[in-house]
Length: 62
Image 1 (cartoon, rainbow, N blue to C red):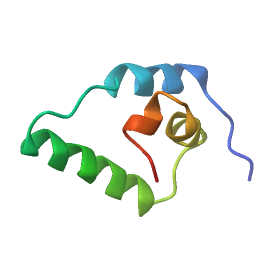
Image 2 (spheres, rainbow, N blue to C red):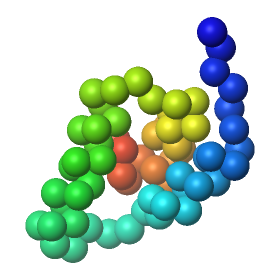
Image 3 (cartoon, one colour):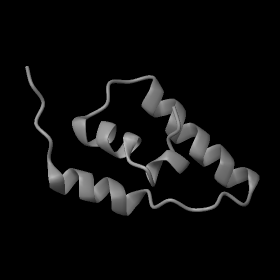
């Protein structure tokens, strides 16, 4: 089965996870939880594109 890329879902990801400077331990823990979650499950095509975009690299560097 081929998964289809959905631009609207990708737009939602970009809006929900804007790159930002991590300033506190709590923000660091949140970012780590997002990365760990994305590493241990099957990602959607939109998540894969988001994960490999230059701006998202600051969040998802795995």
